[in-house]
Length: 373
Image (cartoon, rainbow, N blue to C red; front, side, top):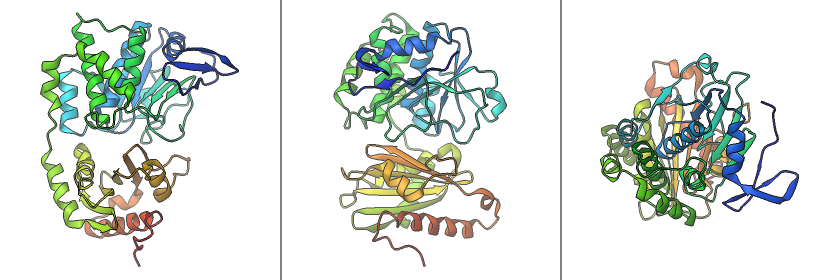
């Protein structure tokens, strides 16, 4: 397929302006249909970056439905495990077909790549030279690290599932009330909006409109089974360790939780969610060691804190220009590889080094947090 210039996304939710002719506008769903139709009959992979969460899973299911409608064989894939218990329940109860990849060679079979709920490729897996993004749909802040013929990035919206609900409502792949398969997709989309807007407390008008569209199509009984969010035992332990380790400077809190298993990486995020609820804390960073990297979460209640910028300033970028951290309104995360240091048998010594490094980096942003001597 010939490479075309990326679409320019306007600030109007329903419309997109074509590059070179700002006077003409069309629906974004029509541009998505046009882009994907050019890949008809050619295998496409929908690659989820990071640990799959409800917003990414719901968006991927909707994207796959659109691909099926347009004759594009699509596979949903991820690299990192599904970590939160409620997310594993979502995948199981909705029978979501996810393929976990570990080698670059596993991507050789695909001709096209679609990214949902992210505007960067998975950093832990090198893509084959021929596999370039075809579409990117995301709601996170920050400049996209890759480009594609179709790009729809709306940081003012609470969830990527909201964008996909708009596409489906436009008729690119209509959801049918009598279809159990479509009910499964609607349920996943609604749960994605709910979780990424913190139970609609951070929802925008577009998020509410999307939820109103999806709600009558959902399988309510099924959503009740995975909608009650449980807390894993490891998350409880991480919260306890974070409270013991926590240091408060003004309205900022910093806490380390030690080693966390990859399966329960979101124990770090759970600890951050818990600590930021303390009345005298506006922003918190919780971090730990996960599978050979420093893994952390930021949560904030401060309108003046941009999580993406905060983490970029603190931790910088890799040699390829990819930031070690990113975020959206009120939330952020970072992952910093520690390389060969992960092979040491001195786990206590390694953790002390990690604590010093994280503290020194955060002192770039929080001046009162004196760097270690």
